[in-house]
Length: 522
Image (cartoon, rainbow, N blue to C red; front, side):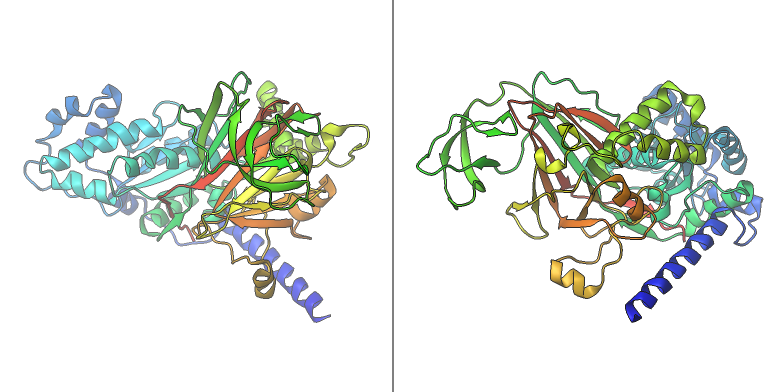
């Protein structure tokens, strides 16, 4: 009885927190911000703004630096308290994108506000920030101070924020530090990155005053760290895939240790091939048998031949989640429906209604498993291995039979603010070998969703998802058979992944060595 009371109290607290977040998001709380004072705190000196603008426009740092190197020759110009650049996705947020852009330009100058349809984040990183760095090298202390104190605000959805974070990550690889931290004005549908760092889940109604407060918080807010995750997809050459913007082709395709699943047959040490749900596997060489009683034991092996002559590889980085299965299939269908009929989705609320309705048409709620093998659980096509924290060995994790979608989650916010992992009690964590989940702990929380009814109860916080594992690295092997394709997505960008009947495809996820920097808006 006591535990039931505690759960009820927890749900009441969660509901109150949700209401408070909504009020904050609507701009009904907070102090008044003086427009002119805010502008003084934000505005970069005019000569630097023009230098940044011209460097980006000409795509040549050196060509413009000479024109502005004497801009602060008197030494009187000083960097503002919080120099800031804002990227606006004018296509997000319905009608609010263009209006927000105009408002921001009034508050801080047009040269500090970039429409992503005109200026890409990597162009600003390469040429805009490069211009400040070049002037700093020439002895311009104002340029150096501006570069060191620079912060970034992103007005858009999770995909837009990830795009900017990915471009800023190039500063790490090029040794150009410090890396500016990022704040968010939520304009997307889910806005889970925005929620996770205290910037709210939706664009506020009283947005003109809320924007001023958001800019002020972006100047003074503490900086937090966010794990970034590198994803590599390897598939047999010849397979046709239409990857999302977040996945790019790559020539380098080196997977970790050669561990594969294969059947063990007594008195047999060499197999030309193996069958699994109609799929033909690799021809393999020496087998180290560990358990003759288990027909599907993980073996260490060397690969002799019958490997594809050509391999296609794609790579990308995600910050919130990667998933495979039914949820990605629904997201893929909704994505294409929205592109074909954009008039159906004019804002976050209509998007969610259409998404919910479309889910019901995809067979997640009513699954004719006997007559339609393509709707069976992921166990039929998927083998999963993980590396746990501070461990160099891959460990096989069985895929639960009933699971039809698997999600590897980095944030504590998923699908518009839900937390499917929940808040397990300390004794449960200890029993399962888990730790409390954080966005900078170097771990992904892996959970499963069963049929649509189970997913629906998870999304309304009535139950937790099926806990599977916590991992510092993940390796998925996908095989064909009666399945011709699977569906995957990362950070809301879905794609259709073909499955070969002859060879396996692999997905490998590892943490990026450096972390992204976010500004806490709470």
